[in-house]
Length: 516
Image (cartoon, rainbow, N blue to C red; front, side, top):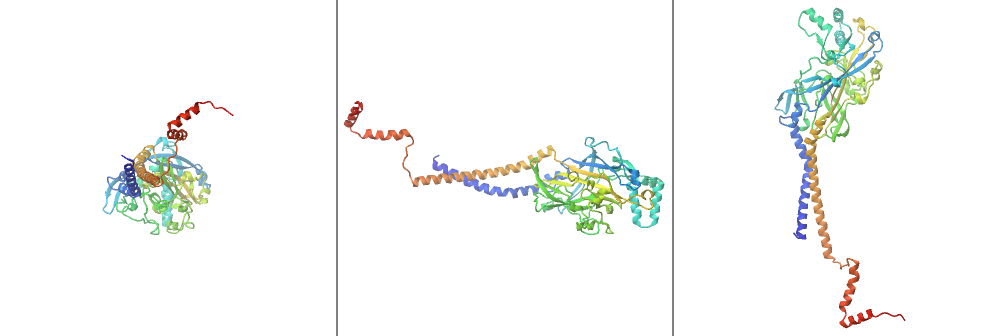
């Protein structure tokens, strides 16, 4: 192949590769978007469906209890001294069952959760005991007061005395969470001779059971609505609060949302949290990389838990009488059968100063006690979770309960919880090989095609231009070395002389020279 044909081939190839790279590179983004929308749709057979049914990352549920170390002094009106004990750790078995794909691009399901105790991640066995308030006794006292007549107070007083109950109790961690025999319930069961439940526990009956039917959007008609809650138990709103705004069930369950998150457009995510009986929002904080994976961090801010004087939206979450708890507390009374129960972050993080002043043992630390979700912006999946909550009982004086006569109004922490998950090596490897590797390979391939095409094209153009300049302005031959410079004039001199001149020159050169 001669030089001209070679240049033609390189030029044509350069043009073709440049055009191909220029077309393919802009199509990579829309192409990835289309693939993600198809694969993440909550439809049987997709990658999103598999992760939707079975959580691919290990999830743990940890418990810290607050042990009351000065019970006698507390009953005499002194500040309660609390000692944190924990964690007591469970591995969560999370899955979805009874799945029904509906015609309106939604899917309904139940979501039972199993709890398996993990000894080597716990401070001790769950049979360890601690001292705290009698939850049932204070709930009954609050209900009797709310009814507003003395008869109910006297009935509760009689029940309290006859059942030999106390307003403080010592109970095992396992019993407090999953059920212990309560004196009130046992007395009523024995008195009526009817088979009634005699046990009470904060999470009693929730191990491997689910009493809620969730319906969420599949993203089939609009990927932006992926996993957004449509209704819970057939209801698209709650009925606990005073306004439609407060009763909204909006957002997702927090596990994942639409792909290709934008830090500016998606600067706030909403999730519905059943344990606090309302939806909440987390705000975008920052982005970072870990194990080669990019994450967006969303966290609960102090503003979400602020008093209505600071955050007016929280006025809708006050009780019917308009009574609002201090900053840092969420009123859970309305959705827990009248129990004087209030939620907060652990150690009253972001709470009003009075909360930590009235009890000892609180050491709020933002890094250890805040709530955040770390999302993969490409898929919208939440891969790192730290969801923390503290349950507090409002204790105060009740006239019909003699034991409470010296109590001061206090929000007493009982237990705090942390549901968490983190990346493990197996998932990181799977994610990199299944998601990042194909994407990065395609990007590198398209860029390589474009670079090679541009290189060939510009190289060909430069070569053609140089050839053109040389043909238009030819230059005289220049000697290439010193030997040529000295030998060429001498050769020309000898070839131009006649034979006689040559002989004469030889004689002159052989004759010794003399100096005058």
